[in-house]
Length: 65
Image (cartoon, rainbow, N blue to C red; front, side, top):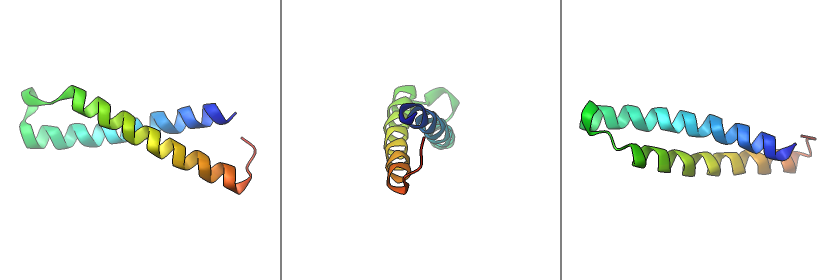
């Protein structure tokens, strides 16, 4: 199912970007100054973009998912 593929890729990408942004914020601002809303928002945006790109590639290749 395509929506399951999209959701899985979204969660993978959002988790990876979230970890990266958390690390960058931690190094830049320190532990008590991390902006959680910033991390969650940009992780969701990046996850949606990455999942959509991956889904388009699967659809163009003609794979049955």
